[in-house]
Length: 497
Image (tube, rainbow, N blue to C red; front, side, top):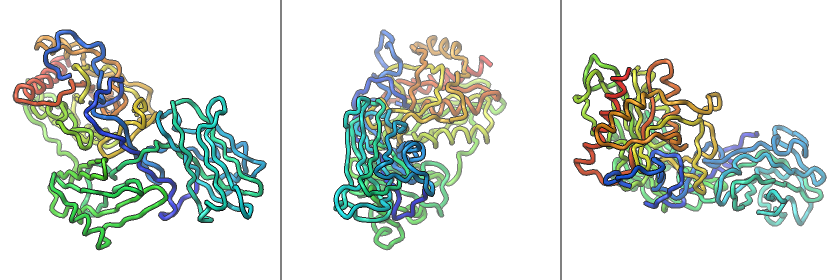
């Protein structure tokens, strides 16, 4: 692949959050996502409704749309054109027809963007046509580049839209007579675009810079820092040039210094950005979480994790974050506990917990997430990040969507829990709860964290994941209830060693 300069970047597009709503999505999707009280009969699926707060999604990236799946021209067009300087050169007698296009397993309205360089063409008329064809060679979408539409002799992005049902498609790139076309790559991403923040939550220095990425047609409407509106500060930074704005074919990038936007930030600061109907958030830490254990100083070291609210503009607390915060470590015997409330971000949450495991050396890690309609004791984690069952995917809090992407290509397909689930189940049942076993934690952030926990703790101790019931209202009794659930799970795991 050729490297593009900043002003000719490929179609770096942020995939969109088509809508956030408190709607019921009952598909078995991945997630750290009814109310628990009053149920007399256990639901069939403990994780039903896992992502009920979502409708659609957005993406991640660096040089490509933030959830783009990229296919090199050398892969797609190897039998058609001539390799040339890292690209494939096509002529009218060497058209490219390829089916090895990554990302087409996603469902909904998709775009395939072809990165093209027009070397030569006729004086007028057609130059090249890009088409998406179904399994029966039915035309699903196509666009023809003509001389009247060619505005530049440099690299261009040529997008074609189609509606995908997740089945394989064929892409055909057909140069017209007399045309010579270089193809670098093709990228597939959802058609609707939104907002993504980088670099993501974690330790960030004052000298570091933040990037807000959004569609070129959108603008940042509001910026918040720890709940305070700092839009005026952001606007002044843009006007003075301290914050830099760059626009490419599809997107706008806003680059702003941490010290400029948040000069008086505390040890942990929360940045929230709004652009139209889209919202993304990111946590800025001055340092990684300290290894602070509470409780019996001579007891087993236990790390328990929960999550911040989600979606990024979520209207209610996350039951997992509430539960570990409500835990009273003094009620535990033979255990000292470190509590960690993590960002709802794919790589950042997993990286934070594995960093804590490496630095703080726990004997036991139990992660909790916001789930469906019951307490779900998760038996297995999967080496997959994917919310493709919802059209466009489901974003994490900073805007990233994963579509059929492995967590670690070198790792096994699954990892089994290391928790003593029998003992935990017995303790919860004795306390009047109705936990259920689950072999499907979804493929969202909770599964991501569970997979990371297990990989980091194998051979060093025990680890696993428990989904708590989706809950939106937290009075004192509800907080106490879930704090007790966390306590019972920890105690049972400690006693079963």
